[in-house]
Length: 458
Image (cartoon, rainbow, N blue to C red; front, top):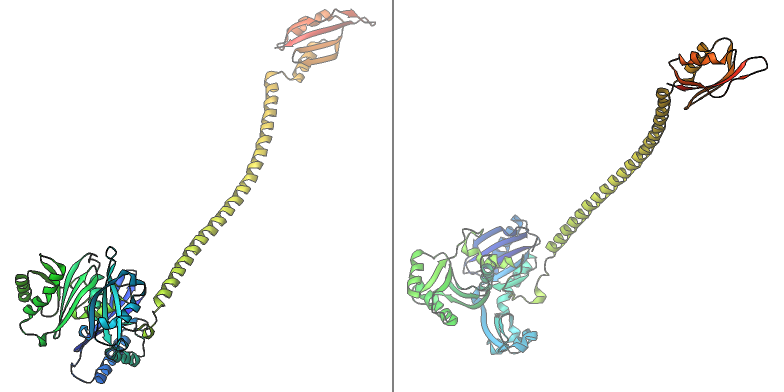
């Protein structure tokens, strides 16, 4: 999980290993690790004191304050049983196991701690396959003392077999359906496990000092039940963990046991040694969900899960959401301001456009008036020029009392001593044509001739 941290402490007779894991967006990271040797012989109190100092120094050096701590204990301290039960007891499996515990282990239920995990369900036969792990309370008590000495809560306790299973099962290149054996050699202990579909389906621990024969014969002997359990006629795949995984030993196992044995490859990982694998598998529970959920520490004694990672994730998620909202809100505000600015500019331009349109209307009227005047100026002779020409051509003995000027021409009325002399005089003008009397000539009382003449303009 994001921002979670786990500290795995694998305590064996001869050594203590520590692995500190941190979860992030890039995945699980091994932030710190250490392996310390221990004197196998010695009082428990003295050994616990040494382990307490080592753990405190490791946590202080690496500034570990809020990690979930998981302890690993030797495989041979626990009793493992693989049992089958009716499917109907699944809802109250712990109660059913408590009630029938004496059928599986020769110890009183009041003197033990236990945990279990369902390995498979067969709905056709209505059966459950269950892994039951039992440990005496007297074997757990020293680790409870360690918790008190450290002054820090412990989230869980399990054996190295389940921790190793979690390490290999959580590797990204390990398919769900893989079935393989784990051969783990450390100090004078040989541990043989069978992992099937990421769960521990078989486990056995043997002290090599109590057996006779060489190492490869012992391994072959302990792997034989696995072949029989799997019912395989082909080669059994086995991963070898330990310092004695020499080429000669592996070749002899391949030849004599028909085994596909290969050493555990750590070159592409951040784990420096096979001895650190159990501690790594323990710490995994602090940062992600692991396939093997065994926890031998009673519920009431477990440290409550550390929520710092959750809170950090929620805070960061909240900050991201607020940032997105602020960014989106800022964009909306900016768009609103830009829109208001555009609307104001459009409104201002509308006023200028209206003013321009009014000016254009005035200009059009002026243009029309100018065109009208120009039409009259260019197409018609000015009246003053006509009057000037008439006054120059009409003799002194005649005068005009009425002058009409229109598009049809000019009409003049007046009196003259001899009206008939006017026609030739007016015809000589370049301004007129079709000069003619519009009415007959009449005499007035004073003897003058009254005329009415029409002229057309050239």
